Image 1 (cartoon, rainbow, N blue to C red):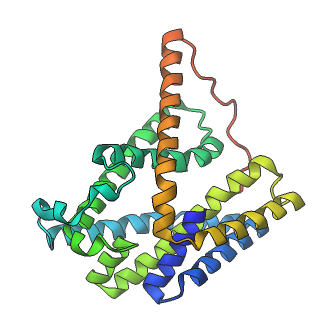
Image 2 (cartoon, rainbow, N blue to C red):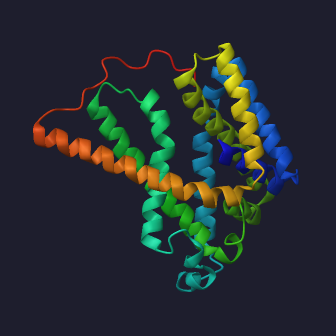
Length: 269
């Protein structure tokens, strides 16, 4: 959530010139109000903006890959691998995949009680393929304009602005909605594990969490990403290893992991 608030501040600043601290404050208030009042239907509606983000990303990637400013052979001159946490490119790729798993795990463990293993496997397969294709397209677009994107906090937004201001505005709105939705979706599972949703203790913990998250977000989006993402990456790798061990163990012993008897009946977010 901290990184989401910082990212919201950066998006407000890059697009509208609003100070980052104020943009983060607006995002924090929106998260606080949503989780206090339980605006479930709003969050469900916001889920529909994801296809819009995919379409915009594909447009940005296609335009920039077909009109590159930097040849692929010269991309290395604009990068400095020593500035990464490990300095090893392939390890950075693995830790990034760990980030995706770590960020999704807390939510999937609550709302992912799919009774059909067949459906779950297909969903994981096709979802992974779609994510891979989108990442290849987006990274291709970023690399084709790396002379500009290498120094930007939100490089995708910079690329959109280079194409057309209206596209940049559309991307900003979609990004802010998704950042908001993600912040709410990450904070709610944490709070609901320890306190009954919308109870007095829940609301106290909510206020404390949002206030603390806001002040920590003032450190800055880039600095927070550089600090937290490697940690999340290694955590995700550890989760992947444990899940693999459990899967192998179930195959060796012939004991399947117990499936949930029923899906989660009540999920507010």
